[in-house]
Amino acid sequence: MAAMLQPQIILLKEGTDTSQGKAQVVSNINACMAVADVVRTTLGPRGMDKLIHDDKGSTTISNDGATIMKLLDIVHPAAKILVDIAKSQDAEVGDGTTTVVLLAGAFLKEAKPFIEDGVHPQNLIRSYRTACHLAINKIKELAVSIEGKSMEEKKKLLAKCASTTLSSKLIGGEKEFFASMVVDAVIAVSNDDRLSLIGIKKVPGGNMRDSFLVNGVAFKKTFSYAGFEQQPKKFQNPKILLLNIELELKSEKENAEVRLSDPAQYQSIVDAEWNIIYDKLDKCVQSGAKIVLSRLAIGDLGTQYFADRDIFCAGRVAEEDLQRVAAATGGAVQTSVLGSCELFEEKQVGNERFNIFSGCPSGHTATIVLRGGADQFIEEAERSLHDAIMIVRRAVKNSTVVPGGGAIDMEISRYLRQHARTIAGKSQLFINAYAKALEIIPRQLCDNAGFDATDVLNKLRQKHATGEGLNYGVDINTGGIADSFANFVWEPSVVKINAINAATEAACLILSVDETVKNPKSESAQGEAAASAMGGRGRGGAAFHGRGGRGMRRR
Image (cartoon, rainbow, N blue to C red; front, side):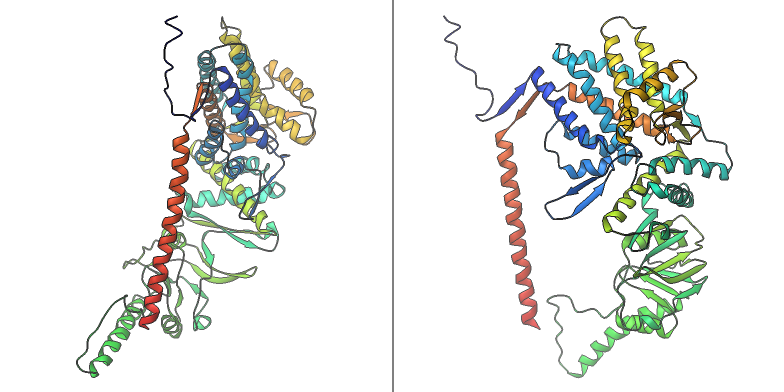
């Protein structure tokens, strides 16, 4: 009786939504499997593309896992973890973003029946981590090094890695053309880690093969004033001056006030202004520079002044372009150190004019000028090249490769199944489940190409079981199996290691969550914060209009 009269303990605020236990783990697994299903069809050379249309009216066509995950705007808290691992894979190695999401989804799918049967998630997590450790060690053991080869051989091997990455992209039809371009760009940058030193410029029009690589810097012609057309557009071995100042008459600061007792003094103030700008322009000419670039504006006076002295100038150059010119020519922004290059010219590319610096002494930059039809196509081509550049950079640093086309996944799956037989207890089942999940990659490659996945996987299992078919994977062209290594379907081992690591961590993290608490207070607080931010912007806008009004009255 005493127990019945005990007061109810109210721990959480009214309206708080909690869900816990086995049902919560299964619910999270279902959400992640739904996310994996979205990107499933984009895997491999025969993968389909997704068209994503947002509320602003812009459309994106892509089959890059990380791009799709970012644009999906997922709200489920557990499924967001898959978005994060796709982003981390993109940032770390550049490729394998779809693979990592698919693997995480497959690990969770295999874990689901065990959870429903009452297995404790921690037992699964322990076995998954063991299996992950074994898989990564096996990859390192199977990886083939490309170190110690001559430069020509290394270039060919790196081009093969880039081709494998590009084969699943929209520009896969021209993968050899772009692969060699990407390898040349990465080798030009040499050991510098800054990705910004490889510029990609997009020019609509023409076809893909009109794209070209500049061993130096290229950027679109900037806004120009009268006198620009009189300037020379081609120089051999010019000196280059890089500035961060305005070369034009500047209006006085707001509320500036000059009091004169004698009207004759007014002319001296006007003259002082002209003297300041002429002094700047004279110093630029005296430096011996034939090309003057500035991040800020070069006005009509400066443009005409330079044109009269056969000097080329460009103002309002983007910060990143200016930094790349500095890195390539050996100059520095706004110092007495001038840069130089073998050839500068202004060229017409499609409807745009481009300033091109080539034969740079430091040579630590490269620019790829991309051509193509629709804007969405060029955008996707840029994303594809970004992936290929990242892959080649990783392959240069970690010079080991593994066979692609699902070959390495099948081999690890076979190895783990074999290892599971030596383990007593439940973990044998869990490691077997992990091994089965790894087969999702060759299975999905077959499904996306329209082949009979069961038939191809049976052939692969048989080939790998004999011990001779180590490098055998899916042959996309014939629908059978083939030696991926002999067919040059390679990928850097770091891609696979990172993907398996990230997918296992994500799966373990989702399995370890058994309760979700949704706090109503925090939701309303977020709404209020957003509203106040909107209000703040409104007030800022009003203040801005006020200043504009005063300025106009003063004139």
